[in-house]
Amino acid sequence: MIASVANLASILATHGRRTALHFEDDGISYEEVDRRGRRVAGVLRTRGVEPGDRVALVLPNAPSFVVAYFGALRAGAIVVPLNVLLRGPEVEIRLASAAPRLLLCDETCGRDVRDAAERVGVEVVADIGTREPTDEIIERGDADPAVILFTSGTSGTPKGAVLTHGGIRAAAANAADALALHRDDVMLGAAPFSHVLGQSTGIVSTFLAGASIAVVPRFDAESTLRTMTATRTTILLGVPTMCIALCDAAHTASALPPVRIAHVGGAAVPVEVARTFERTFGGEVYEGYGLTELSGIATTWRAGQERKPGSVGMPLGDTELRVVSLDNEPVARGEPGEVEFRGSSVIPGYWNDARATAEAITADGWLRTGDMGYVDDDGCLFLVDRKKDLVLRGGYSVYPREVEEVMYAHPDVLEAAVIGVPHDTLGEEVAAVVVPRAGATPDADELRAYVRERVAAYKYPRRIAFVDELPKGPTGKILKRAIDKDALFQRRS
Image (cartoon, rainbow, N blue to C red; front, side, top):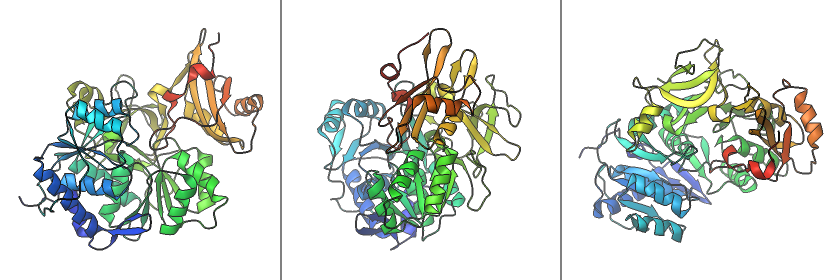
């Protein structure tokens, strides 16, 4: 078959001997990544993988993931990346849904993952680079599925979002354009490659620009900062908690990297966190918005554009944005409602799940995000909160993000999560779970009074609990659903 530029694997051949990956003390060229990927494609071909077959990956943030990803795409397969932190039962659910032909892994793959694959009849292959390479790139169209990424499953069984070759390319190209990525940039590769942030915005957008990735297998602030400095990382791709940790680590660092932009998503960026990062590293913080179902970033700021604090920017490329009421009617500028998107990067649906697809995507192509927000007169998007995170206290709506912004400005607060806890008469009470800064011993009454002075009386947290750490997902995003409310807060009337 004649190679098609629509196949994402074709981007590797355009940058030759330029460095694609910085890993440990090595620099790996695009040419070498492509050569290894051709070997993976050869493995898949000899094992009978046909175009459209699924190939699962359980690989860490390492060159092996990148090589396997593009090798599987070269063979025309649909890649199913699974986070290496998933346990056997979680892997089994996803494998049973996607029904991959093979699961590619390395020596880090645990026995529980291999057992899960065996239970659903999926062959595990660890020798992914030992066959003769193939120069063939299977032709793929823009609408052809490239990747199945499973959602986190906050409302039940995880769903497999189907990302197409064209959708990923569109989202990644939008990100590269907005961040003004150029060949000399170095992108931090700490966000999990199995996640849309690390994959679309991290790997693919960087490779489209011919830039390089500083690969970090697992985020640790001190060691990551050393890697960033050694590789002269210019673009930080991460989440707010990562920015907080890096700022703390910078206090004792002997040198800092030349960061020009920190693109932060996955959760709202408190204004004080952004200001602290910019003071520490000198680069600008760009808050953006994206979802797995959007194949990556949908809104952010363009390099050099004047930013508005608290906004996640403006739509990129051909992405359309609207805000609708509970009756699915568009609302006026400045009025809050559910945020919806339409455009090339929106997924066509969920794998073998017509019902979930119909619930998420309207007949005319609008993706229902489940996020609440509003658009100002300049077309900038401001997120208010998740629909599901809204706290209903005695008939009043409390948006946690607004209260968290105030708490992050307190000098003793490192991290904060505002949640609703059951209350017999009010329905829900506002509560806050706080991680203090190192060496600080905040007082609950003082912190409560601090917030009360800055928000309406029904919004401030009556209940405050202090913890050593908050539960986080693979990208570092705070997982409010994993907070043990029963252990921290007893029901009150």
